[in-house]
Amino acid sequence: MVETDRVITIGNVLRADIRGFVVASRIPEPDVPTFGTFVRAAIQQQRADLIGLVYNITLQDDPFLKNLAVTVIEDDPRYTEIIRDQQENRAIPVEIAVAAIGYRDEDGYHYGLPPQPPMILHRITVCSKDEVRHITAAPDFMRALFDNRDVPADELIPTALHRAARLRPEALRAEFFLEAGRYLAHYLGRDPVRLERILRRLA
Amino acid sequence: MLHIERLKADIDALSRLAVERQTLREDDVARALRWLAEAPDPTTLRGRLALVTSGDHDWPGALPADDAPLDARLTVDGDPPHGTVVIGVDGSQVYPDPHAAVLYYLIQIGGLAFGYDGSRPRPYSCEALHFKDDELHDAQGYLISTERVGMERLVQEMAYLAELTAIEQRLTPAATLLALTDGPLLWPHIERSRADSQAVEAYLDALTEIRQAGGLPVGYVARPGGRTLAELLWASRLAPEEIPGRLAENPLRQLTDAALMAHFLAPGERSAWFTRPSATNHRHAGRGHEVWFCYVNVGVVRAPVIARVEVPGWGALNADAITTLHAVLQHQSHVLNGYPYVLARAHEEALVTTADKAVLDSEIQRQLFAQGILARPSEKAQQKAYLGRR
Image (cartoon, rainbow over all chains, first blue to last red; front, top):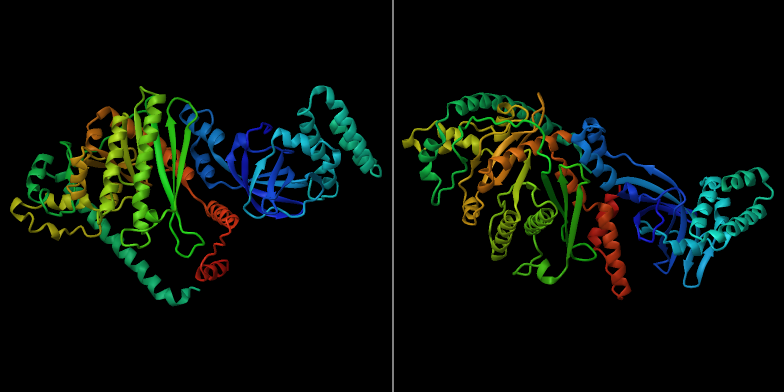
């Protein structure tokens, strides 16, 4: 899981709209962000940063790997180094889909859709722990996900909340979840089935 | 727009010519295989050709480098010895474009150190952006040529290979270190200027550094061209008094060395060592790095894959290192169906993709804009970009 303060540049924006974007990436397997990772991308000529959540990861076709798959045998010691190179070093081509949840400018963090999507080929970076703590300081960061039909929000919201909770002292986690639960109840009061589904995943 | 229908007659002629060449080549192969088996011993051949292999002669053939018969076929048993380290290096470049928004060229070198000890291979890469006036223009003020950028890349590749060899030597002091580069080891460019000569010297310096670091430099030429061996075989048929008079009458016109070796070498086999008596190789020899080469078949039955392997003579004489190199090439090429894994990965590490270049251009333009400079591609480049999207 990518949750360190080490800056990891994931890749470049391939296509984007105001609700999110897709990143084309070639990074080693250990660095591929997981579902629910907080990421940021520069917008408005680097005057602000869009913050988003990874909601889908697609492995692309890799002709190099296809070639290897014919000859390499997993348990054969003659291929140990090659398998390690492929798994631990090699950049695998992936497409990473990100849903926007807010943005940060000189005035601080703002929730909801950003004023502009990131431009094509801009680089995307995993948020630091501090950035995640800041953007999740208020439960409003979930707002943009409720109406985004492309996103598996009912899975993504609990994952993001768990991830944000782990970055807080243990004594504050219950209060963090409680506040999130109240917010969800307020927003999804008219859809009790969906609310229950999300809350169960938080338990 | 290409009017394919207008090229139909040419395409037909091209395929007919390919068939004719194929037939001729088969005849040539049969004859060359016989000549190979009947060739005089290496000492006799070297003596017979002494007249054209010294001084100013420019005979394009090869000489036997040691005392192995010309038709020697050598095999290797088993896997590469435990602990052997093979380092692959390759480079890529972005050429300077006078129509681009900003004038620069870029060289990126990639490498992979692969230890036969179960450890994770170690990828490496470095890059250099060249943008200063004296880097971009020659002494006459003309924009640096693509050939010159190629020379620069070659020097940087070999220097990087030397650097990685030194790093790997420190990590595994007792290991046999094989330093592979994609392409010939023999300097492939013609010296036309002082800058070219400086490039050759820097290249030879790097070969010396690899040797000093305990590495064996190896040039790996996939699908090699050339017919130096075919010239030697023809010379082997001539009487001493016919040399040099009839050297230019070689009837093996359609035969390349690779085509001959594809019929001669079984999978896993390599040929004897040869060397080229060219001016460039004399230059290498002057610095202690005369280049020897052999052919190796890294393919399988009914699908031969011939490569030319070039090493310095001092390395070729190290029988243990060459046996290890042979085993390593077989293993590395088996994994990727006929091409060494480390070189494929080094290429991947070195590659500058179109997307990478677009990001670099965008970043440069953004920085310039921040400094109040608006850099735009030429009108011609813009028009070509529009049309290229169709």
